[in-house]
Length: 509
Ligand code: MSP
Image (cartoon, rainbow, N blue to C red; front, side):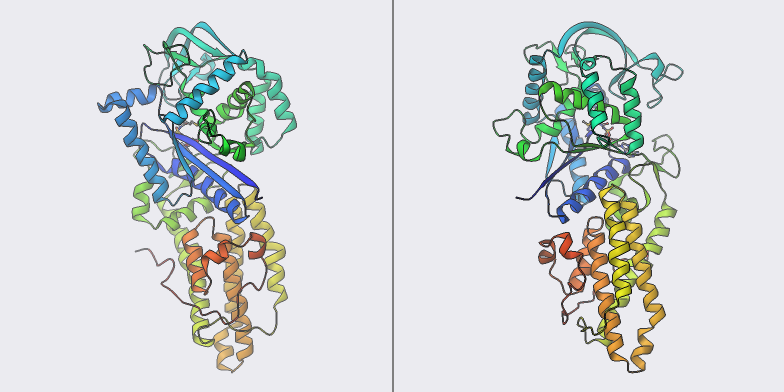
Protein backbone atom coordinates (compact mmCIF):
# COMPACT_ATOMS: atom_id res chain seq x y z
CA UNK A 1 0.00 0.00 0.00
CA UNK A 2 1.17 3.55 -0.76
CA UNK A 3 2.29 5.57 2.24
CA UNK A 4 0.11 8.55 3.02
CA UNK A 5 0.82 12.24 3.52
CA UNK A 6 -1.72 14.72 4.86
CA UNK A 7 -1.08 18.44 4.86
CA UNK A 8 -3.15 21.51 5.58
CA UNK A 9 -2.88 25.27 5.37
CA UNK A 10 -4.33 27.50 8.07
CA UNK A 11 -7.94 28.37 7.32
CA UNK A 12 -8.41 31.96 6.21
CA UNK A 13 -10.72 34.39 7.97
CA UNK A 14 -13.67 34.91 5.69
CA UNK A 15 -13.89 38.62 6.43
CA UNK A 16 -11.48 40.25 4.02
CA UNK A 17 -10.01 39.95 0.56
CA UNK A 18 -7.02 37.64 0.28
CA UNK A 19 -3.58 39.15 -0.17
CA UNK A 20 -0.42 37.60 -1.53
CA UNK A 21 0.63 36.46 1.98
CA UNK A 22 -2.38 34.13 2.08
CA UNK A 23 -1.59 32.91 -1.40
CA UNK A 24 2.03 32.08 -0.63
CA UNK A 25 0.92 29.83 2.22
CA UNK A 26 -1.35 27.89 -0.14
CA UNK A 27 1.54 27.74 -2.58
CA UNK A 28 4.07 26.36 -0.07
CA UNK A 29 1.56 23.66 0.76
CA UNK A 30 0.85 23.01 -2.91
CA UNK A 31 4.52 22.57 -3.76
CA UNK A 32 4.98 20.12 -0.89
CA UNK A 33 1.80 18.25 -1.88
CA UNK A 34 2.96 17.94 -5.49
CA UNK A 35 6.42 16.85 -4.39
CA UNK A 36 5.01 14.18 -2.09
CA UNK A 37 2.82 12.91 -4.94
CA UNK A 38 5.92 12.74 -7.09
CA UNK A 39 7.47 10.56 -4.39
CA UNK A 40 4.56 8.22 -4.97
CA UNK A 41 2.64 8.97 -1.77
CA UNK A 42 -1.10 9.05 -1.38
CA UNK A 43 -1.51 12.74 -0.57
CA UNK A 44 -4.47 14.56 0.94
CA UNK A 45 -4.25 18.34 0.94
CA UNK A 46 -6.72 20.57 2.76
CA UNK A 47 -7.33 24.30 2.80
CA UNK A 48 -10.40 26.33 3.75
CA UNK A 49 -12.00 29.27 5.50
CA UNK A 50 -12.53 30.24 9.14
CA UNK A 51 -15.99 31.75 9.33
CA UNK A 52 -17.00 32.36 12.94
CA UNK A 53 -16.07 34.84 15.65
CA UNK A 54 -16.29 38.48 16.52
CA UNK A 55 -14.12 39.69 13.67
CA UNK A 56 -16.40 38.13 11.04
CA UNK A 57 -19.50 39.41 12.84
CA UNK A 58 -18.16 42.97 12.87
CA UNK A 59 -17.13 42.83 9.21
CA UNK A 60 -20.50 41.47 8.09
CA UNK A 61 -22.28 44.19 10.08
CA UNK A 62 -20.03 46.86 8.57
CA UNK A 63 -20.84 45.51 5.10
CA UNK A 64 -24.53 45.51 6.01
CA UNK A 65 -24.93 41.89 4.94
CA UNK A 66 -26.54 38.87 6.56
CA UNK A 67 -23.77 36.77 8.12
CA UNK A 68 -24.14 33.57 6.14
CA UNK A 69 -24.40 35.47 2.86
CA UNK A 70 -21.32 37.49 3.80
CA UNK A 71 -19.14 34.47 4.57
CA UNK A 72 -20.41 32.62 1.48
CA UNK A 73 -19.12 35.47 -0.67
CA UNK A 74 -15.78 35.74 1.09
CA UNK A 75 -15.18 32.02 1.15
CA UNK A 76 -15.89 31.85 -2.59
CA UNK A 77 -13.06 34.31 -3.18
CA UNK A 78 -10.60 32.00 -1.41
CA UNK A 79 -11.91 29.01 -3.34
CA UNK A 80 -11.40 30.99 -6.52
CA UNK A 81 -7.89 31.91 -5.38
CA UNK A 82 -7.04 28.21 -4.99
CA UNK A 83 -8.37 27.55 -8.51
CA UNK A 84 -6.65 30.52 -10.13
CA UNK A 85 -3.32 29.64 -8.53
CA UNK A 86 -3.53 26.00 -9.64
CA UNK A 87 -3.51 24.82 -6.02
CA UNK A 88 -4.00 21.06 -5.95
CA UNK A 89 -6.05 20.81 -2.75
CA UNK A 90 -8.25 17.74 -2.37
CA UNK A 91 -10.80 19.47 -0.16
CA UNK A 92 -11.85 22.92 1.00
CA UNK A 93 -13.39 23.10 4.46
CA UNK A 94 -15.65 25.88 5.71
CA UNK A 95 -16.30 26.12 9.42
CA UNK A 96 -19.95 27.00 8.85
CA UNK A 97 -20.52 23.64 7.15
CA UNK A 98 -22.56 21.10 9.05
CA UNK A 99 -19.81 18.46 8.78
CA UNK A 100 -17.49 20.79 10.66
CA UNK A 101 -20.01 21.98 13.26
CA UNK A 102 -20.93 18.43 14.23
CA UNK A 103 -17.27 17.41 14.43
CA UNK A 104 -16.33 20.44 16.54
CA UNK A 105 -19.19 19.64 18.93
CA UNK A 106 -18.14 16.01 19.21
CA UNK A 107 -14.61 17.19 19.96
CA UNK A 108 -15.91 19.47 22.72
CA UNK A 109 -17.89 16.62 24.25
CA UNK A 110 -14.83 14.36 24.28
CA UNK A 111 -12.74 17.01 25.98
CA UNK A 112 -15.54 17.59 28.49
CA UNK A 113 -15.63 13.84 29.22
CA UNK A 114 -11.90 13.99 29.97
CA UNK A 115 -12.69 16.56 32.66
CA UNK A 116 -10.86 19.35 30.85
CA UNK A 117 -13.70 21.85 30.48
CA UNK A 118 -15.11 23.87 33.37
CA UNK A 119 -17.05 27.10 33.81
CA UNK A 120 -15.85 30.24 35.55
CA UNK A 121 -16.41 33.99 35.65
CA UNK A 122 -13.70 35.91 33.97
CA UNK A 123 -12.63 39.41 33.08
CA UNK A 124 -10.00 39.86 30.42
CA UNK A 125 -8.70 42.04 27.62
CA UNK A 126 -9.79 40.76 24.24
CA UNK A 127 -8.26 41.69 20.87
CA UNK A 128 -10.68 41.04 18.03
CA UNK A 129 -7.90 41.30 15.49
CA UNK A 130 -6.11 38.30 17.05
CA UNK A 131 -9.32 36.74 18.28
CA UNK A 132 -7.60 36.13 21.61
CA UNK A 133 -7.26 37.38 25.15
CA UNK A 134 -4.20 39.49 25.92
CA UNK A 135 -2.29 40.20 29.09
CA UNK A 136 -0.96 43.66 29.96
CA UNK A 137 2.54 42.54 28.96
CA UNK A 138 1.36 41.66 25.43
CA UNK A 139 0.36 45.30 24.84
CA UNK A 140 2.40 48.27 23.65
CA UNK A 141 1.04 51.64 24.83
CA UNK A 142 -2.16 49.86 25.78
CA UNK A 143 -2.63 48.52 22.24
CA UNK A 144 -2.22 45.16 20.53
CA UNK A 145 0.98 45.67 18.53
CA UNK A 146 -0.23 43.46 15.67
CA UNK A 147 -3.51 45.29 15.19
CA UNK A 148 -2.72 48.71 16.57
CA UNK A 149 -5.97 48.61 18.46
CA UNK A 150 -6.79 48.71 22.18
CA UNK A 151 -8.31 45.43 23.40
CA UNK A 152 -11.79 45.47 24.90
CA UNK A 153 -12.56 44.43 28.43
CA UNK A 154 -14.71 41.32 28.35
CA UNK A 155 -16.37 40.19 31.53
CA UNK A 156 -18.54 37.09 31.44
CA UNK A 157 -19.01 33.55 32.61
CA UNK A 158 -17.28 31.24 30.12
CA UNK A 159 -16.12 27.70 29.72
CA UNK A 160 -12.43 27.17 30.25
CA UNK A 161 -10.06 24.55 28.87
CA UNK A 162 -7.59 23.03 31.33
CA UNK A 163 -4.53 23.80 29.24
CA UNK A 164 -2.42 23.81 32.42
CA UNK A 165 -3.09 20.09 32.79
CA UNK A 166 -1.14 19.48 29.57
CA UNK A 167 2.00 21.23 30.73
CA UNK A 168 3.86 17.99 31.35
CA UNK A 169 2.56 16.00 28.37
CA UNK A 170 3.53 18.93 26.12
CA UNK A 171 6.98 19.14 27.68
CA UNK A 172 7.35 15.43 27.01
CA UNK A 173 6.22 15.91 23.40
CA UNK A 174 8.74 18.71 22.89
CA UNK A 175 11.51 16.58 24.44
CA UNK A 176 10.71 13.52 22.39
CA UNK A 177 10.11 15.20 19.06
CA UNK A 178 12.56 17.95 18.29
CA UNK A 179 11.05 18.35 14.84
CA UNK A 180 7.48 18.65 16.10
CA UNK A 181 7.73 22.33 15.28
CA UNK A 182 9.75 23.31 12.20
CA UNK A 183 12.05 25.25 11.85
CA UNK A 184 14.18 24.99 14.97
CA UNK A 185 13.91 28.71 15.78
CA UNK A 186 10.11 28.38 15.95
CA UNK A 187 10.44 25.22 18.01
CA UNK A 188 12.63 27.09 20.47
CA UNK A 189 10.21 30.02 20.72
CA UNK A 190 7.39 27.64 21.59
CA UNK A 191 9.51 25.61 23.96
CA UNK A 192 10.34 28.78 25.88
CA UNK A 193 6.70 29.79 26.16
CA UNK A 194 5.92 26.28 27.34
CA UNK A 195 8.68 26.34 29.95
CA UNK A 196 7.28 29.61 31.33
CA UNK A 197 4.05 27.72 32.17
CA UNK A 198 0.64 27.52 30.54
CA UNK A 199 -2.61 28.91 31.96
CA UNK A 200 -6.10 27.60 31.32
CA UNK A 201 -7.90 29.48 28.57
CA UNK A 202 -11.42 30.62 27.93
CA UNK A 203 -13.00 28.59 25.12
CA UNK A 204 -16.50 30.01 24.85
CA UNK A 205 -18.38 33.29 24.64
CA UNK A 206 -21.89 34.06 25.78
CA UNK A 207 -24.32 33.95 22.91
CA UNK A 208 -25.88 37.31 23.80
CA UNK A 209 -22.49 39.00 23.25
CA UNK A 210 -21.37 36.85 20.32
CA UNK A 211 -24.23 35.19 18.51
CA UNK A 212 -22.05 33.85 15.66
CA UNK A 213 -20.29 30.59 16.49
CA UNK A 214 -20.61 26.85 16.94
CA UNK A 215 -23.15 26.22 19.74
CA UNK A 216 -21.63 24.63 22.84
CA UNK A 217 -23.21 21.18 23.25
CA UNK A 218 -25.94 21.12 25.90
CA UNK A 219 -25.67 24.83 26.71
CA UNK A 220 -27.54 27.10 24.34
CA UNK A 221 -26.37 30.25 26.10
CA UNK A 222 -22.79 29.83 24.84
CA UNK A 223 -20.90 29.48 21.57
CA UNK A 224 -17.38 28.11 21.15
CA UNK A 225 -14.37 30.36 21.11
CA UNK A 226 -13.40 30.70 17.46
CA UNK A 227 -9.96 29.08 17.83
CA UNK A 228 -11.34 26.04 19.67
CA UNK A 229 -13.80 25.65 16.80
CA UNK A 230 -11.36 26.47 13.97
CA UNK A 231 -8.46 24.22 14.99
CA UNK A 232 -10.62 21.14 14.77
CA UNK A 233 -11.13 21.73 11.02
CA UNK A 234 -8.01 19.69 10.34
CA UNK A 235 -9.80 16.57 11.52
CA UNK A 236 -13.47 17.42 10.91
CA UNK A 237 -12.58 17.67 7.21
CA UNK A 238 -11.47 14.03 7.44
CA UNK A 239 -14.78 12.99 8.93
CA UNK A 240 -14.00 13.24 12.65
CA UNK A 241 -17.25 12.88 14.59
CA UNK A 242 -19.22 11.68 11.57
CA UNK A 243 -20.43 8.20 10.70
CA UNK A 244 -17.53 7.82 8.26
CA UNK A 245 -14.07 8.30 9.70
CA UNK A 246 -12.22 6.42 6.96
CA UNK A 247 -10.23 9.44 5.80
CA UNK A 248 -9.34 10.27 9.38
CA UNK A 249 -7.99 6.78 9.96
CA UNK A 250 -6.12 6.85 6.70
CA UNK A 251 -4.56 10.31 6.84
CA UNK A 252 -4.36 11.64 10.39
CA UNK A 253 -1.92 12.70 11.85
CA UNK A 254 -0.81 15.22 9.27
CA UNK A 255 1.34 18.31 8.85
CA UNK A 256 -0.18 21.71 9.65
CA UNK A 257 1.38 24.60 7.73
CA UNK A 258 0.88 27.96 9.42
CA UNK A 259 2.34 31.45 9.67
CA UNK A 260 4.53 32.48 12.57
CA UNK A 261 1.91 34.60 14.37
CA UNK A 262 -0.40 31.64 14.88
CA UNK A 263 2.30 29.16 15.81
CA UNK A 264 1.36 29.27 19.47
CA UNK A 265 -2.21 28.17 18.83
CA UNK A 266 -0.97 25.28 16.72
CA UNK A 267 2.08 24.10 18.63
CA UNK A 268 0.73 24.40 22.18
CA UNK A 269 -3.07 24.68 22.31
CA UNK A 270 -3.88 22.31 19.43
CA UNK A 271 -1.83 19.31 20.63
CA UNK A 272 -3.21 19.79 24.15
CA UNK A 273 -6.75 19.82 22.74
CA UNK A 274 -6.05 16.64 20.79
CA UNK A 275 -4.60 14.86 23.80
CA UNK A 276 -7.66 15.86 25.77
CA UNK A 277 -10.04 14.47 23.12
CA UNK A 278 -7.95 11.31 22.72
CA UNK A 279 -6.75 12.00 19.18
CA UNK A 280 -3.14 11.79 17.94
CA UNK A 281 -1.15 15.04 17.83
CA UNK A 282 -0.02 16.38 14.42
CA UNK A 283 3.06 14.98 12.73
CA UNK A 284 4.51 18.45 12.48
CA UNK A 285 3.68 22.12 12.67
CA UNK A 286 5.58 23.72 9.78
CA UNK A 287 5.86 27.44 10.39
CA UNK A 288 6.57 29.92 7.63
CA UNK A 289 7.53 33.58 7.87
CA UNK A 290 5.74 36.68 6.71
CA UNK A 291 5.80 38.36 3.36
CA UNK A 292 6.37 42.03 3.04
CA UNK A 293 5.98 44.21 -0.04
CA UNK A 294 8.75 46.64 -0.94
CA UNK A 295 10.21 45.99 2.50
CA UNK A 296 7.06 46.92 4.42
CA UNK A 297 4.22 45.05 6.07
CA UNK A 298 1.23 45.04 3.71
CA UNK A 299 -1.36 47.55 4.78
CA UNK A 300 -4.30 49.38 3.28
CA UNK A 301 -2.98 52.63 4.70
CA UNK A 302 0.36 52.25 2.95
CA UNK A 303 -1.49 51.02 -0.13
CA UNK A 304 0.98 48.22 -0.83
CA UNK A 305 -1.38 45.26 -0.53
CA UNK A 306 -0.94 42.86 -3.42
CA UNK A 307 -4.09 41.08 -4.46
CA UNK A 308 -3.16 37.56 -5.59
CA UNK A 309 -6.01 37.43 -8.09
CA UNK A 310 -4.90 40.66 -9.73
CA UNK A 311 -1.19 39.83 -9.83
CA UNK A 312 -1.87 36.76 -11.96
CA UNK A 313 -3.75 38.95 -14.44
CA UNK A 314 -0.67 41.10 -14.70
CA UNK A 315 1.97 38.34 -14.84
CA UNK A 316 1.81 34.67 -15.86
CA UNK A 317 0.82 32.49 -12.91
CA UNK A 318 3.76 30.13 -13.40
CA UNK A 319 6.17 33.05 -13.18
CA UNK A 320 4.56 34.27 -9.97
CA UNK A 321 4.69 30.77 -8.47
CA UNK A 322 8.35 30.48 -9.43
CA UNK A 323 9.25 33.90 -8.10
CA UNK A 324 7.68 33.34 -4.69
CA UNK A 325 9.18 29.88 -4.20
CA UNK A 326 12.61 30.98 -5.40
CA UNK A 327 12.74 34.27 -3.55
CA UNK A 328 11.01 33.70 -0.21
CA UNK A 329 12.51 30.99 1.99
CA UNK A 330 9.88 29.11 3.95
CA UNK A 331 11.57 29.57 7.29
CA UNK A 332 11.99 33.32 7.14
CA UNK A 333 10.30 36.56 6.18
CA UNK A 334 10.68 37.60 2.57
CA UNK A 335 9.88 40.48 0.30
CA UNK A 336 7.94 40.98 -2.92
CA UNK A 337 8.72 43.83 -5.25
CA UNK A 338 7.94 44.33 -8.93
CA UNK A 339 11.56 45.12 -9.68
CA UNK A 340 12.82 41.88 -8.12
CA UNK A 341 10.07 40.05 -9.94
CA UNK A 342 11.15 41.42 -13.33
CA UNK A 343 14.79 40.62 -12.60
CA UNK A 344 14.02 37.01 -11.84
CA UNK A 345 11.58 36.77 -14.73
CA UNK A 346 14.17 37.93 -17.20
CA UNK A 347 17.19 36.26 -15.65
CA UNK A 348 15.83 32.91 -14.46
CA UNK A 349 12.81 32.32 -16.65
CA UNK A 350 13.12 34.08 -20.03
CA UNK A 351 16.93 33.86 -20.30
CA UNK A 352 17.20 30.77 -18.08
CA UNK A 353 14.88 27.81 -18.39
CA UNK A 354 12.93 29.30 -21.33
CA UNK A 355 15.97 30.06 -23.42
CA UNK A 356 17.71 26.78 -22.62
CA UNK A 357 14.64 24.77 -23.67
CA UNK A 358 14.37 26.75 -26.86
CA UNK A 359 18.06 26.42 -27.68
CA UNK A 360 18.14 22.66 -27.14
CA UNK A 361 14.98 21.96 -29.10
CA UNK A 362 15.95 24.27 -31.97
CA UNK A 363 19.28 22.50 -32.32
CA UNK A 364 17.67 19.05 -32.21
CA UNK A 365 15.32 20.22 -34.95
CA UNK A 366 18.13 21.58 -37.00
CA UNK A 367 20.85 18.98 -36.54
CA UNK A 368 19.06 15.79 -35.55
CA UNK A 369 16.03 15.56 -37.83
CA UNK A 370 13.62 16.63 -35.13
CA UNK A 371 14.11 13.53 -32.98
CA UNK A 372 16.10 12.65 -29.87
CA UNK A 373 19.47 11.56 -31.33
CA UNK A 374 21.28 8.33 -30.57
CA UNK A 375 24.24 8.56 -28.24
CA UNK A 376 27.65 6.96 -28.56
CA UNK A 377 29.84 8.45 -25.88
CA UNK A 378 28.50 9.04 -22.39
CA UNK A 379 29.54 12.23 -20.60
CA UNK A 380 30.15 10.86 -17.13
CA UNK A 381 31.17 14.26 -15.76
CA UNK A 382 27.75 15.64 -16.53
CA UNK A 383 26.01 12.60 -15.10
CA UNK A 384 28.08 12.70 -11.94
CA UNK A 385 27.44 16.39 -11.48
CA UNK A 386 23.71 15.81 -11.88
CA UNK A 387 23.38 12.73 -9.73
CA UNK A 388 25.97 13.43 -7.04
CA UNK A 389 25.56 17.16 -6.61
CA UNK A 390 22.38 18.55 -8.13
CA UNK A 391 19.81 15.89 -7.24
CA UNK A 392 20.99 15.54 -3.61
CA UNK A 393 20.88 19.34 -3.13
CA UNK A 394 17.46 19.46 -4.77
CA UNK A 395 16.10 16.64 -2.61
CA UNK A 396 17.48 18.10 0.61
CA UNK A 397 15.80 21.41 -0.26
CA UNK A 398 12.43 19.85 -1.01
CA UNK A 399 12.43 17.57 2.03
CA UNK A 400 13.37 20.44 4.33
CA UNK A 401 10.77 22.98 3.10
CA UNK A 402 13.61 24.93 1.44
CA UNK A 403 12.07 25.12 -2.01
CA UNK A 404 14.30 28.13 -2.69
CA UNK A 405 17.36 25.91 -2.29
CA UNK A 406 15.90 23.17 -4.46
CA UNK A 407 15.36 25.73 -7.20
CA UNK A 408 18.78 27.19 -6.66
CA UNK A 409 20.26 23.73 -7.33
CA UNK A 410 18.09 23.33 -10.43
CA UNK A 411 19.26 26.69 -11.78
CA UNK A 412 22.85 25.79 -11.10
CA UNK A 413 22.27 22.89 -13.46
CA UNK A 414 20.56 25.11 -16.03
CA UNK A 415 23.57 27.43 -16.01
CA UNK A 416 25.85 24.43 -16.38
CA UNK A 417 23.92 23.24 -19.45
CA UNK A 418 24.05 26.71 -20.98
CA UNK A 419 27.77 26.75 -20.40
CA UNK A 420 28.17 23.37 -22.10
CA UNK A 421 26.52 24.80 -25.20
CA UNK A 422 28.70 27.91 -25.20
CA UNK A 423 31.86 25.86 -24.64
CA UNK A 424 31.20 23.12 -27.17
CA UNK A 425 29.56 25.25 -29.86
CA UNK A 426 27.49 22.53 -31.55
CA UNK A 427 26.90 24.79 -34.58
CA UNK A 428 30.66 24.81 -35.23
CA UNK A 429 30.85 21.03 -34.70
CA UNK A 430 28.03 20.58 -37.22
CA UNK A 431 29.77 22.80 -39.72
CA UNK A 432 32.90 20.69 -39.34
CA UNK A 433 30.85 17.57 -40.01
CA UNK A 434 31.29 16.13 -36.50
CA UNK A 435 27.81 14.69 -36.50
CA UNK A 436 28.36 11.99 -33.88
CA UNK A 437 29.64 14.60 -31.45
CA UNK A 438 26.69 16.86 -32.11
CA UNK A 439 24.36 13.94 -31.50
CA UNK A 440 26.12 13.04 -28.27
CA UNK A 441 25.92 16.57 -26.98
CA UNK A 442 22.29 17.08 -27.90
CA UNK A 443 21.29 13.73 -26.49
CA UNK A 444 22.82 14.72 -23.17
CA UNK A 445 21.20 18.13 -23.27
CA UNK A 446 17.78 16.67 -24.03
CA UNK A 447 18.10 14.24 -21.16
CA UNK A 448 19.34 17.06 -18.92
CA UNK A 449 16.27 19.08 -19.89
CA UNK A 450 14.04 16.17 -18.91
CA UNK A 451 15.68 16.18 -15.45
CA UNK A 452 15.13 19.92 -15.19
CA UNK A 453 11.45 19.46 -16.04
CA UNK A 454 11.08 16.89 -13.25
CA UNK A 455 12.78 19.20 -10.75
CA UNK A 456 10.51 22.15 -11.47
CA UNK A 457 7.36 20.01 -11.68
CA UNK A 458 6.06 20.76 -8.14
CA UNK A 459 6.63 24.50 -8.52
CA UNK A 460 5.72 25.27 -12.13
CA UNK A 461 3.72 22.23 -13.19
CA UNK A 462 2.44 23.62 -16.47
CA UNK A 463 5.92 24.57 -17.64
CA UNK A 464 7.31 21.19 -16.62
CA UNK A 465 4.60 19.43 -18.59
CA UNK A 466 5.14 21.64 -21.63
CA UNK A 467 8.83 20.73 -21.62
CA UNK A 468 8.05 17.03 -21.32
CA UNK A 469 5.58 17.23 -24.19
CA UNK A 470 8.11 19.10 -26.31
CA UNK A 471 10.60 16.33 -25.61
CA UNK A 472 8.09 13.87 -27.02
CA UNK A 473 7.13 12.42 -23.65
CA UNK A 474 3.67 11.46 -22.51
CA UNK A 475 2.94 13.42 -19.34
CA UNK A 476 0.55 10.85 -17.86
CA UNK A 477 3.14 8.12 -18.33
CA UNK A 478 5.80 10.24 -16.69
CA UNK A 479 3.46 11.02 -13.81
CA UNK A 480 2.93 7.33 -13.17
CA UNK A 481 6.65 6.84 -12.60
CA UNK A 482 8.27 7.18 -9.20
CA UNK A 483 10.70 10.01 -8.56
CA UNK A 484 13.41 7.41 -8.26
CA UNK A 485 12.75 6.25 -11.81
CA UNK A 486 12.50 9.78 -13.09
CA UNK A 487 15.88 10.58 -11.56
CA UNK A 488 17.66 7.86 -13.54
CA UNK A 489 19.84 8.88 -16.42
CA UNK A 490 18.76 7.76 -19.93
CA UNK A 491 15.06 7.64 -19.36
CA UNK A 492 14.51 9.50 -22.61
CA UNK A 493 13.89 7.31 -25.63
CA UNK A 494 16.16 7.74 -28.60
CA UNK A 495 14.11 8.61 -31.67
CA UNK A 496 11.33 10.38 -29.72
CA UNK A 497 9.93 13.05 -32.01
CA UNK A 498 10.36 16.42 -30.41
CA UNK A 499 7.75 19.11 -30.81
CA UNK A 500 9.18 22.55 -30.21
CA UNK A 501 6.51 24.90 -28.92
CA UNK A 502 6.13 28.58 -28.21
CA UNK A 503 8.71 30.32 -26.01
CA UNK A 504 7.94 29.23 -22.43
CA UNK A 505 8.55 32.68 -20.98
CA UNK A 506 8.36 35.42 -23.59
CA UNK A 507 9.98 38.66 -22.53
CA UNK A 508 7.74 40.93 -20.46
CA UNK A 509 6.74 44.09 -22.25
N1 MSP B 1 -8.20 32.02 10.80
C1 MSP B 1 -6.93 32.04 11.43
C2 MSP B 1 -6.24 30.69 11.33
C3 MSP B 1 -7.02 29.54 11.89
S1 MSP B 1 -6.21 28.05 11.61
C4 MSP B 1 -7.09 26.94 12.48
C5 MSP B 1 -6.06 33.09 10.75
N2 MSP B 1 -6.45 33.51 9.55
S2 MSP B 1 -5.69 34.60 8.65
O1 MSP B 1 -6.50 34.73 7.47
O2 MSP B 1 -5.46 35.77 9.42
O3 MSP B 1 -4.30 34.00 8.31
C6 MSP B 1 -4.23 32.76 7.61
C7 MSP B 1 -2.80 32.40 7.31
O4 MSP B 1 -2.25 33.39 6.43
C8 MSP B 1 -1.90 32.37 8.55
O5 MSP B 1 -1.12 31.20 8.56
C9 MSP B 1 -1.04 33.60 8.38
O6 MSP B 1 0.24 33.47 8.92
C10 MSP B 1 -0.97 33.70 6.88
N3 MSP B 1 -0.59 35.06 6.50
C11 MSP B 1 -1.28 36.21 6.72
N4 MSP B 1 -0.52 37.26 6.30
C12 MSP B 1 0.68 36.80 5.83
C13 MSP B 1 1.81 37.36 5.23
N5 MSP B 1 1.93 38.67 5.06
N6 MSP B 1 2.78 36.53 4.81
C14 MSP B 1 2.68 35.17 4.92
N7 MSP B 1 1.63 34.61 5.48
C15 MSP B 1 0.66 35.39 6.03
O7 MSP B 1 -5.06 33.47 11.32
